[in-house]
Picture 1 (spheres, one colour):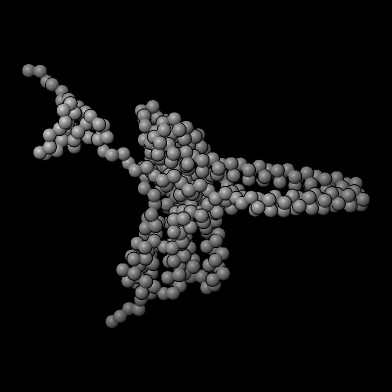
Picture 2 (cartoon, one colour):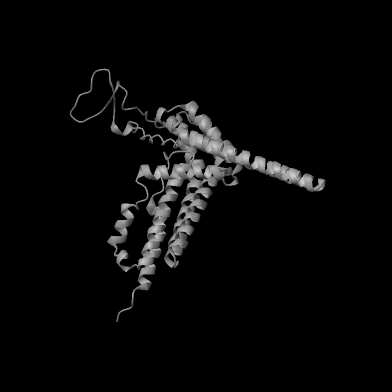
Length: 347
């Protein structure tokens, strides 16, 4: 008696004109391949929309800042030249000392300028990668997806936390044929650990803002603390995803984050969170300061979520985007607990 191994069922696509899905009571056309619904491949996943391009600078603003920078540079140059001439008029050693300090200033300025240019170029590279990845998924372009994957793996070499993920991804590159699947595989391996850390960063920042603004006696302190926390959060998220923003890079990042908030409905807190607050009766238990702290924490969380989508080098395709409830769930629980503590005991 010979053992026959079971034949592996063959899968067919529903969009093939020669394939007909079997249905009860309906005869199939002649010459068509009849398959059962269980053998048909599922419909392809919905491709994510193309990310919004970063806001472009106005031509008049570019001319304004270029002219202002040129005038300030000329003024500083003339002032330094006049100062060195006066130092030489007093004593030669003072003049040479002034030249030495001027050389140090020029070297430092060139180093800072180079860092700013490098940071802007890195941000532009990450934005281009995000757009190319979205196009590769939409067009199922294997060549473009492979270029995006290799570029991301090169950027990930500076991150020790992604060594294992990068090694596993390199072993699966040749086995993936479709470009969209390659981008999704890259996202699962390289972005999953970074997304978890980014979500934790946003959650921690929202909790700090909520606590500090709830106990702070002055509104000016609240404003300064929220601003400093927001700047630090956006910078840490950018560094986490491979960006190296300087001062100009941070200004550009904030413009992109604000533009993203304006497009996505922005600074308003999520309906689900507000419904949860009102539905559970938490809002009635909170004091005015504690309620203000919760609102500031929610706004900080919303800003952090927008910063994640702006600084992330890949669009959310295979992995779900973090929601407001993911980063603010601990904030809501903490607020409810504090509100119960503040309630006067009865009986």
